[in-house]
Image (cartoon, rainbow, N blue to C red):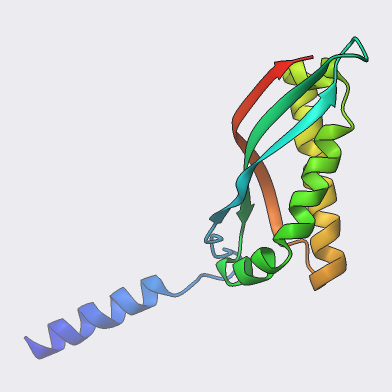
Length: 135
């Protein structure tokens, strides 16, 4: 009976070991850029301003890097506000424009984290809320 338990434990332990050629799955975590990004953008008519409110979630593959991310949050926020504020109304309104903005922000966020920490840290970003008005 004891041999059976030991054998079962050994087999279970061996199966739990990572196999050569099989990488461990990353343990993704999500960090929100809080509070929401709220900023103005110039509409088609230069006398009218519109505004956009966006909730941004950042995906990191290594949860131990969350403290680094939170430390640089003011710089990331300022960058997001700058990027949204510089966009023309057609990019703010269209789905393809939103995707363009998301990719642009992702590149800038990665570059900031690489410069500040030596690692990209951020794998992806997601807009979980996207509201716009006016313009």
